[in-house]
Length: 551
Image (cartoon, rainbow, N blue to C red; front, side, top):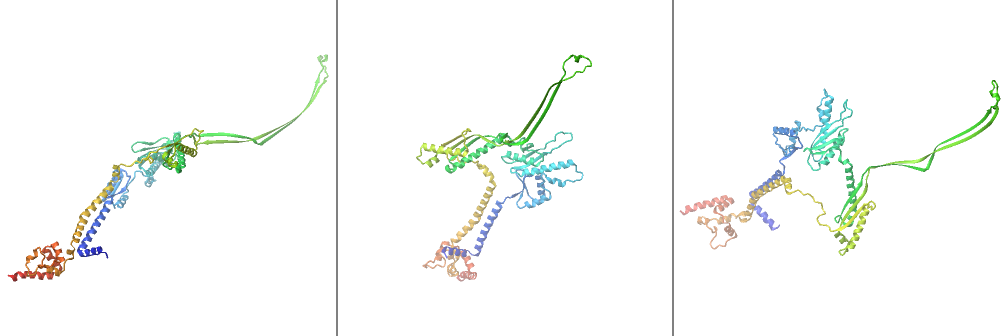
């Protein structure tokens, strides 16, 4: 076994049972204090009971908790209630017995307390609207950033003497904690419109708790200008992504920058055309007409004479010219159906009318690729090759009027990353104030325990280890020899020379150690009493008898 371990074991044995027990108790106490302090200081004094409450609910909850003797605290925003740690379950059970919290946004549970006896149709309609408003408000509050919401719905109503039916409408007031309230307002409009029968999104108005109008009227995302802008941004992003995919393996992601501007036409077009095919014809109908005509004509003529003027005279007629005719006619009509095709095309897409592309390349990267001795002509040739690559990747069309420009410039270091807004020092301190206070308190407690507990114990151990002879203690014979004999004067106990040392005797190591320590006579006597009380009593009797014998 190493000497250090042997000396450590010997020192520990020399301490005695009482000192070892004292040291163990101090160590256990220090560890217990540190553990309790760490648990207590790092545990919040209060736990959140409910959040997002109304003022009426906060007041009623405070009254109930105060009557039950449970301590509570109200958050800085006035909408949350906190209770001491460990009493959350008890407080919630107590409040549930009292029916708290009673949210103002009551939903379909309103029908639980509605009796069917004496309930009119108007009351049923009002209860239905209230329940619908409460359910929609609850759903809106589940959106991230929305702390509270209130919904008002006007349902459609058709009166007897009203020609047109009244369209439904709605208004929503929200308390928002965030920056993108406009986007949430548009989502809320479509949510409310989908939950109410016959309600369109343009009939929903959204406001915030400060009275600012967030959304009203037509949806701006459906306008032609917004649609054109969205299509342009999509096309520009797609073309820029094509440029990055083409140049990144060659130049690296940080050695070029590309900018794209696209003019997009999003006009709606409708085209109708009819195509006839004369080569493909089909007989649809055949009409045949056949006519046979035959005619005979014979004319009689009366001659002109005197007899025509005599009364009662019959004149004889003479035969005139005769004619006969015969006519045959045949007519055939054939109707053909010509093949035709009608095409109606409705285009609701887009077309790129013009595109402008600008690409800047890091000149140092080109020099690295071409070598340090690269000439401007070589760099210009490489830039031309990059321009051809970009034109091929983006669908460049010179006839359309597209413009492309690739330049080689020197990049400035440190401007590649986008600036990120970092919170200030005061904001960070305010965010972590509670953690800093707990950590500081824990450090103070550890310091106090170490200063008032470990430091005295270490000093005692150091002092004890500095006196190994005192810890081990001399044997009883050595102590007896060190004490004055009855024949020796009693004053020898108080002398600086060690008692029992004979003149001219060689000093022992024990005598040298005793000279260094120089214990008082009282201490030596106390040690002797601890070693053997009976022997010490005999020595004291001898001391007491010595003066009597001398007298």
